[in-house]
Image: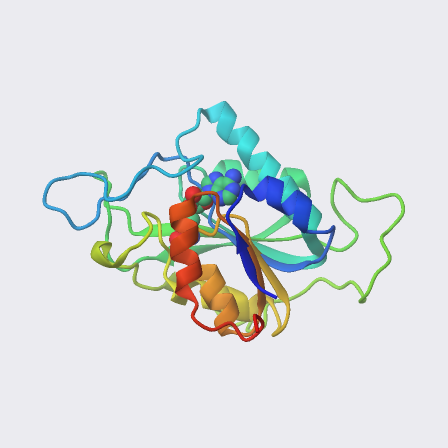
Length: 247
Ligand SMILES: C[S@@+](CC[C@H](N)C(=O)[O-])C[C@H]1O[C@@H](n2cnc3c(N)ncnc32)[C@H](O)[C@@H]1O
């Protein structure tokens, strides 16, 4: 059964997700930019409020980030992928922390958003999506006694290995957005198809308006997500009308 929980992802994951049971993590954490969106307004003002954990001190943000990455490492099956959205400002931190926790960073996808956004020393048109793996028989927190395995452990490869790491997918226009940092579903679908099989379990720690939820469900995957804000949680659950697994 697929489900989104209106709760903190650390609390939720610790309570609800067992060790090494998740096939794929796709997540878009706060970038700590204190960004509430601009919307399509004449007067420059934020279209939304600043969301949780997007306006922390550097120290708080580092602690917040290492904690959720550790949790992601715990729940992901060995040999499986994690995709993490981030922009150029916190890319170095995320890269370092993913590696520090035990993931192997495999690539950095550049999302070309086609339309420019803010920024005045070259207008921003790209974001990054880090692809990392919890490699089999590697990692800092390897256990002494291995867990009983339900399936043979193998490092998973992406399905179509001729796809490049620059993805040109238009961002949503401001007046269509229901979340200040909403990602188009078209951006998420290739990650689902490339790194999981139908029926497998996809997790998003920072659901927002729910594009990972929609992409997972519409491609026959099971989904678990966490969203701390009640408003964004409500937008996300409205997104998917029919989930074949939720009968
Ligand atoms: C960058 S946004 C995700 C946007 C989403 N990808 C979309 O397209 O709509 C991050 C989201 O994480 C939520 N959030 C922040 N801290 C959280 C936490 N500790 N647990 C769960 N959700 C959290 C925020 O409310 C925000 O909606």
